[in-house]
Length: 190
Length: 190
Image 1 (cartoon, each protein chain N blue to C red):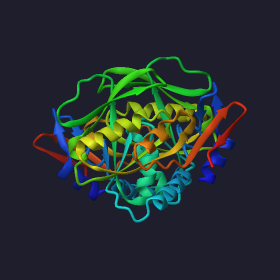
Image 2: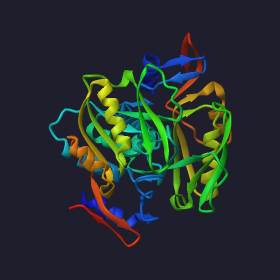
Image 3: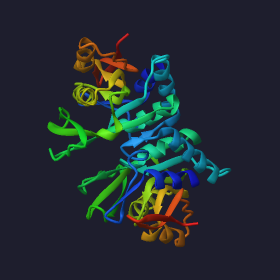
Image 4: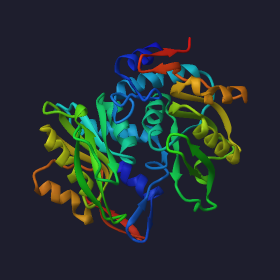
């Protein structure tokens, strides 16, 4: 999505070579009209395909998921992150390792909100190592639901998480894929 | 908003007399089309008034804020919660006491995202003691911005937080105000 690439180039800042700050439109400040444009792009990507629910993960995935759902008129379910392993039998759960924070956490979704008739689109703001998405895939599989695809706003292609999921047969379509990034500049995958 | 009251009555459950669970449409599962209906209601409430930004607080305020912003075509800024007092001079911050969790935390908004020209609508999912809103009011005042009003989806009227803010002169308009709540039933303010 060219408009997203341009926005990243004009407003994003790269910290320590690997952290991309886009807080002016996609994090602590949310340019909701622009998020709706992304929603339209996602709607076109999955045109004609049945989707019953959009699944994301708290907290940073919620804004983009709600904007996409506003355009596509779908419900959103988000996985909650728990530090402890203390989850009940009423939830699907999966273990996720965060490289950014170097901790493991448990993500969970109540069984009431996902079932074997659901056709699920996974969305998130960032895709890097792909561990969070793998956790969501695990949860969808536990529910016996179908994974329609996975779309993240910004994929750090050089971290390989997206390509690993593609090789595993999942349809992963990010709106902007970064192939190289440093304080000198950002290169997108063509 | 009658549709919201009906939804609370049909899908909400009251736990321990004071916790209202509405996770099937306003928390871990988000009925985004219904959130957009709420957005339309909020748009009508502030018809003709200039609003430059919608301010909320992470994490549960983000979904409703984005839905309202999608209808009103505004930007959203959310305050982040920090456990430590370790915030930089580049943010506005305020101390907030959480009665639910019995902890104090610091909320903060980068100075880049709020200034004295902003006319701010505060939104959140729940209004109870009003401490979170008071923190947001504090932050808006630090920025020298104008508070247009404050709208929460569900106000626990009997906890007095909303009325305290009204007495202080703020325009507080919640979409559903609960006057009494127990496992026997829920009564709304007329």
